[in-house]
Length: 254
Ligand SMILES: Nc1ncnc2c1ncn2[C@@H]1O[C@H](COP(=O)(O)OP(=O)(O)OP(=O)(O)O)[C@@H](O)[C@H]1O
Image (cartoon, rainbow, N blue to C red):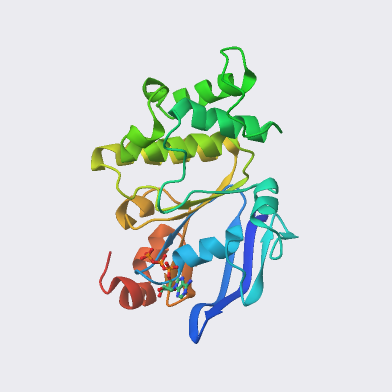
């Protein structure tokens, strides 16, 4: 008998009304443990808002969010992060005035239960520094370790964000447009980084991405958002063949 993997993230009846506008309209989503799920949809469909509600930046008007079966709807952003929910943002999130290595070391230090204090300068033998150096090697950023994070290319900033997630204890990772602004030559490397992250951490990945052709090539499932709702959740193959998706969102065969 085929058994479904347990859900890493479950969203039920999630609604958000702001003023008179319905931004999320009873969204249901079940993200299987260990899967990579892509979220697509036209501009303004509600993808980033969904991520903001899942990560706790915005409280929903209705509905629930559960992480590994535990309700987190009322938890703070920090409590969700402690429970294993990690996220990147549409606009990069890192400390631009710190080196690439310091950014990753700080995240490693915080994960190990230490502080985010910069007063603890990196030392070669320091376990957080060691982990940061290994992780930079994993994502191919060793050569940029001493460069200020604000000075590296878009592609390398995205790799840095993945390195920060790698040293964190996140079991469910939300990536908001990880390929935005990344040079086309760097896209396949970034896809490999995301795949490697999932394989190494055995984590679950939910990612918004406008590069649909790239996304369809490597995710397990695709959720299609349209006017604050998820109108389809299926394998990439079935999504491409779904007439509702084609007419409602893509307007053409993909
Ligand atoms: N704080 C807010 N107040 C009012 N409206 C908002 C607010 N946040 C988002 N919206 C509206 O909600 C809708 C969904 O926005 P959201 O940014 O989530 O869409 P998206 O699918 O991520 O779009 P994009 O692909 O362009 O990033 C949009 O119409 C947006 O204008």
